[in-house]
Image 1 (cartoon, rainbow, N blue to C red):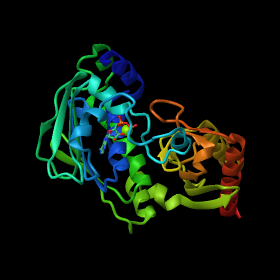
Image 2 (image 1 turned 90 degrees about the vertical axis):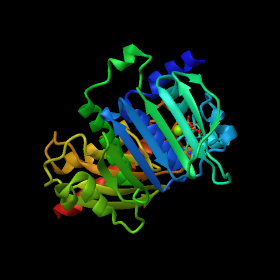
Image 3 (image 1 turned 60 degrees about the vertical axis):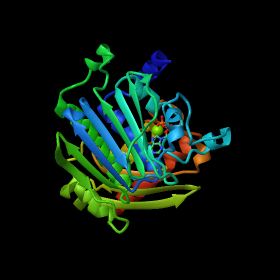
Image 4 (image 1 turned 180 degrees about the vertical axis):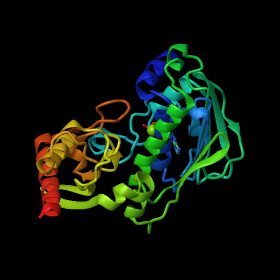
Length: 325
Ligand code: ADP
Ligand code: MG
C-alpha cells in the first residue's frame, strides 16, 4: 500500500508547492477562514499548515490518510458537479508516504483533539493531543525516503518562489481567507482575509501597482457562461507569462483553449507576440466541466470547449476594443 501511495505521490506531489496546495485546499474545503503556513528551507525541511476549519473526528483520522477515502463526494452525481477543491482522496496518503507526517485535529463537536503520526507510509496509532478546533498537518523532510525524487528538488529560494506563486493565485481568488506565511521562523507574507477588501486592492498587493493601474475590468455573461476579472490594457507592457491567472469555478487551472482565446483577443489590438496579463474567473455550469482530468487537478475539460473559447474571445475583444475607441 505504501508503494502504491508513493507511486501516486509522483503524480500529486511534484515539489513542496504541491504539498502546500493540497493542504491549503483541504483547509478551505473544511471551511477555514484563517490558514497559517509555516515553512522551513523552502518547505523541503518543513511544511506546517494550520486551519480553523471544521476539523476531523479522532476516529476518522486513519480514514483521512487512507487511499481514496474522501469525505467530499458520495456518489457519481457528486463527481458530476464537484463543489469542493478536493475529491480524489489521495493527497494525504500520497504525501504521508513520502515524508514524516503528522495530522492533528479537533472536530467542532468534540472536546478533545487527537493526532496521528505517519512515517514514510508507516501509520502509527491515534493518540490524544491538545488542539483547538481545526486541523494541523505537518510534513517534514519531503521525499526523505525517495532519493530519486529528493534529487529533483531545487534550491530553497526556487521552491519558496513556487510556493509564493501559488499563494498569489489563491489570494487573488479568496479575498475572504486570511493567509499567514512564515519562513524559517520569520513572518514572510500575510494576506488579510476581509469580505470588504476591494479586489483591486488585492490586485495591487499581488501583481503590483503597474498591473493594477492598467487593469481593465471585465464582466460579461451569456449562454450560461460568465467571465469576470481583469485583463491588462495593451499599454501595459510588463506582462509576462507568469501574470496569467485563470480560474474555472474558483479553481485555479491552466487551459489551452481559454489561453488561446485571450491571446487571440489581445493580438487583435496589438502586434503579435506580446504576452497578455490577466486575472480571469470563468463561471460555468459544473456539470459542463470535468475537473477529474489529472491527479494534480491543474486542468479541466469543457464539454463545449468551442463555446467557451468563442465566448472568452468575444468578451475580451469587446472590452479591449472599447479602450481603443
Ligand atoms: P480529498 O481532499 O480529495 O478528499 P485528501 O487526501 O486531500 O482527499 O484528504 C482526505 C480527507 O481528509 C478529506 O476528504 C477530509 O475528509 C479530510 N481532511 C483533510 N484535511 C482536512 C482539513 N484540513 N480539515 C478537515 N478535514 C480534512
Ligand atoms: Mg484534498
